[in-house]
Image (cartoon, rainbow, N blue to C red):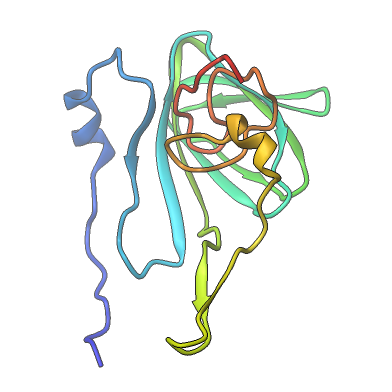
Length: 168
């Protein structure tokens, strides 16, 4: 049996961000601990950039604005976002993000998405896929995090913020 995990400082964003090029957008940092139950991503949207309207059906998401400003649009209502704002995005809510003139840097935290698992004995192992989309939709899968894009033409992944091909 392995030793239990101990709390530890992973990153200090006020010390980390000055070393990241201001030109870099998308996912700047990701929680990568092996046995975690959470996922977290630090995302930067460029000035006046955004994440297209989408619905996350499976997970609640907590969003913390680290730097910059912008707005959250949810079913026609706009919430102003500024450094220090904490927003709860309940599952099944429609949301879109827009960055202000100086861009928007935010942290998302949510439960870890289930992946693939192998069940049974070595002789009868079966791969079980939890969820997923039809193969014809593979052009909408974000190459960075594997999440299905809500809209085929969205320039950024709504989940991790990474720039994706507009060809989808």
